Image 1: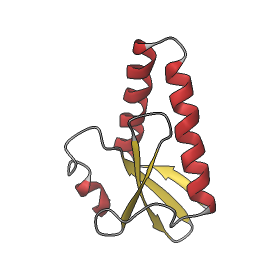
Image 2: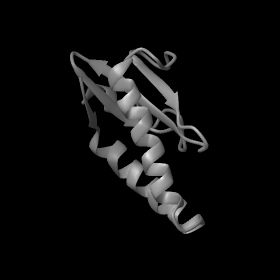
Image 3: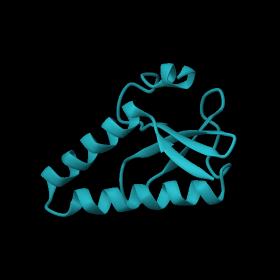
Image 4: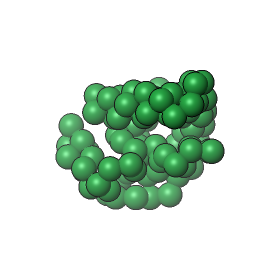
Length: 96
């Protein structure tokens, strides 16, 4: 099983790293590591997160107000988005 970030989700993730880094030196790196832990866990247990919309699921990132929204296709975990914006902004990414 592999993981792949949607281009938009990658941008969201990088933006969140910068945001946390502006809040406190080193916080962006801790956030990135916490997201990495979630994604690695999803590779091991793909249905670990509750169902969200259509065939997507989510997992909460510990110690951060951040959800990783994903779906499984074959042997790939597609990371689609996070929950810090309008909750439906990422729905078009399901079709990509």
